[in-house]
Image 1 (cartoon, one colour):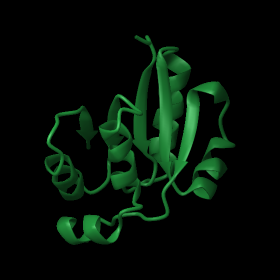
Image 2 (image 1 turned 30 degrees about the vertical axis):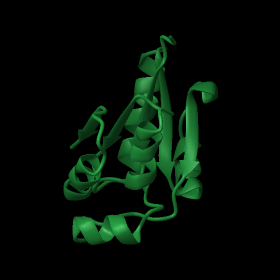
Image 3 (image 1 turned 180 degrees about the horizontal axis):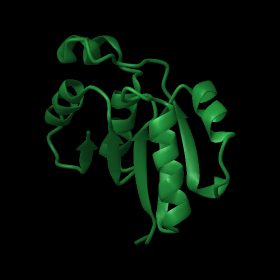
Image 4 (image 1 turned 30 degrees about the horizontal axis):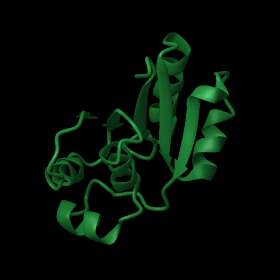
Length: 127
């Protein structure tokens, strides 16, 4: 069993995305050598933000997701229409055992809906 905790961060979630989630993720990586962060979202936007920071590049991974779910979108419809959203892609990484936890400041309704759609429990944090 690995001592490294792999945390998926919805880089596109929240009012101040992608700046705030990426800054928080990089702060976590720089402060704790037992964390590996998987940033999910639009690769170009993520890379632009990452260029502002110094960090261990071995402990940060990017997984591309084309879609972003807005706060004003009905959760069920958004999840059905946007299967390649940062929320759905990120939660599926945890569901399939590719990460240990998922963190998002995005649409709480979508996160809760997607969480309930899976039969097993897994760590999720939304803000």
